[in-house]
Image (tube, rainbow, N blue to C red; front, side):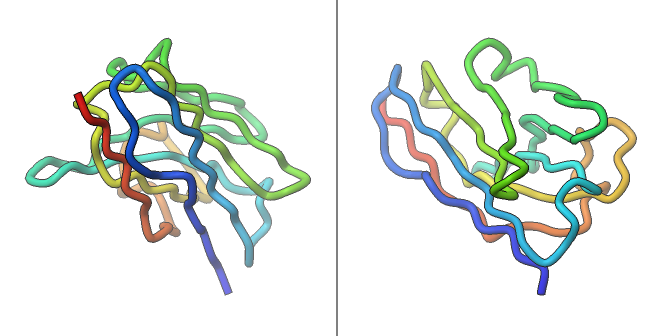
Length: 124
């Protein structure tokens, strides 16, 4: 059974930090790119970052560049999103997703499997 399970969300004040985790199981982790997306109410799902074994970090969204860091621990089949200097506009449900093939990693349609999401709320 394919599973992607996010954890680490919560409520944090502006300027604070959170680390999200995405634990993967049921597929060959190294054969997939793992992306982070976020979606706020009334807005399109937005690509945040993506990482793969072959290509490393594929991209960061301009809105998070310099503040967020994606990383992976292949031994644990886990991808992390370290979020620093959080802003109110970072408030969203954050999802991790796995893609067997990616063109650029930005597009949600590229991804085959999705986690359930974890809420991040940043208070100002």
